[in-house]
Image 1: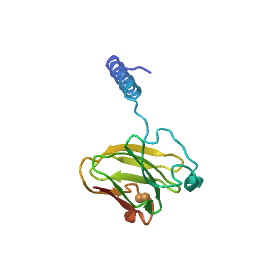
Image 2: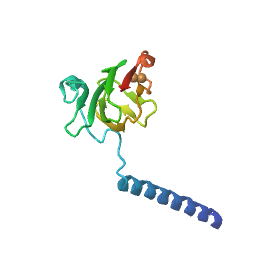
Image 3: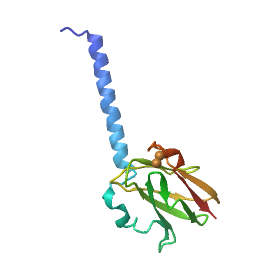
Image 4: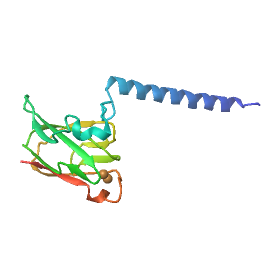
Length: 155
Ligand code: CUA
């Protein structure tokens, strides 16, 4: 099969661009420490209620003054559905699902994770402004998906 010289040049440019872009993505992922929200922390989805920290879901104050919020997303609610933290608090959320894939999105923040059975997702946020923040599931998870929400009171 004969390939025209200019076609070979364009094929070569296309292949080189692909290699360069994949290299940039790979280098950026390594240098910036980009990882999935789970940070590769696993859990047995059939034993969520018996596995720390989900034995005692809710907000816990840590020794360094920051907070940890352990929340389970299940069909079709978050447990606990309402938490409160002081204004200015640095809160690290740990969340998982015992059943299907759910979303974990806190409106007006950059916290937006998937809750995948078998994985513990985590994200940290500093609540600088007081108010009531809506926590919602933004992954379609079944007939009750639109009921799945919670609130975070920042006082
Ligand atoms: Cu849970 Cu949608």
